Figure 1: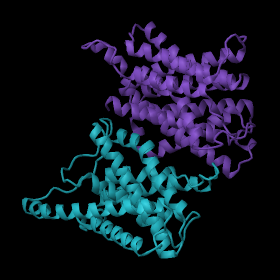
Figure 2 (figure 1 turned 30 degrees about the vertical axis):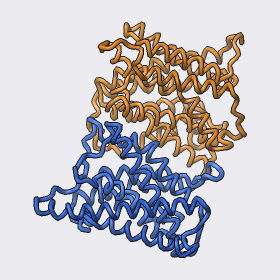
Figure 3 (figure 1 turned 60 degrees about the vertical axis):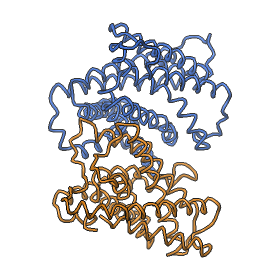
Figure 4 (figure 1 turned 45 degrees about the vertical axis):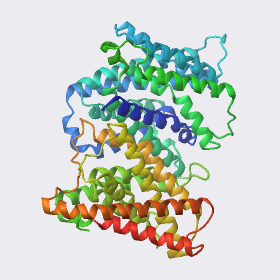
Length: 303
Length: 251
């Protein structure tokens, strides 16, 4: 898989996650986050188990352990994100949720992995774009929601780096299937503690089932398997840069599908300017024109 | 012609058809009950299947998609028009395979170069227009049902999903990690190759006829005309159908 191919795969994941909001809004707020995670991940595990049943024979202790670690990290990220979103205005939550683009390079530097000039310039531009699109106002007091959202972004950065390391030593497909299975397991245990009747607490409709199935298929089964495959070939920076274009994809979806988010969205000039910054930043971070020729170590990081 | 029916002579190919059918049904049926976005209820994520299955599995993938679509129709949308869906989905998968291998180089489908990426996009576009024209105009001629929205919905579904989600799936299935056995046209003997050279020019003529008729029909539909509107559109439609079937049948 070359760089263009991995970028295409990563972009398709961003598209799936951005469009998942359309389907998630059709799921009633009364359904517990644990129920949501259990059902979507459970169906995704089932689909992946059926499609790749022959390959599951290759699951060994090491892959299972790595899958469990990934599931645990991802679960923390999802829960903290959920907590943050419920306590913060959407714009603030959106901005703080995108801070992975800042945390990831810092973590990489901590691991003594250098960034290329293109990466640095690109990240700064993306950050400026995120500030514009989210419309965040600085000076707000720090709340639990704020801290939860920041922690969620930090954990997401840890997750991306961990996936990067694990996909180099384990089969990406088996890691993806294993992670999905353990996410379901953790989700179900917590759901059982919260609501012992679990599946019997929900009044199912065709719409809820169809939305859960769609989210399971695209936002879980497809996106995570593709993420595992592409991370085998792409650097963590590429993954983060590509996922940071999510606000732009969302903006385009809003234009393409009116009433996407349950209300008529008004696109502001600030959002358009922000989206432009993000796109330019992503292109800058994904290319090498600022790097000196022959600097192979830097190219390696750019994916 | 023999290539189209070749999957029914091999056990391995029959298994491939079966797997395609199962995946198609699995992806199509759950979304039949969905009313998610007003005006976009017909969104069919299963449409990532035909182009990818056709390119990777050839005629077996095309049969799998056609049979899968027919069975999926039994879950709520089965009617006389399902025959158009059957043939349309067969074309949606088989046409990309025929177009990709038209020069006979037996190149494994991949998008590792920009040229191949463009080729994939054009093949998807060709497949989407053909399927949309075949189904929408087929409804008009056979059942006197002219619904312009059907054309646009089929076209956007058949173009959007293969480009947005089908492309990444193709990338992963043609990556170093995949051990999928990709179907390529059979190798020819020197005599067959000579015979094929003359056929190639015939194929080129048919392809040009198909492309020109498709562009004309596309423009006419965009302008608000229907297939049975006048003699000219009927003639162009006739050229489209004849060149399409002939192009598919010639090995």
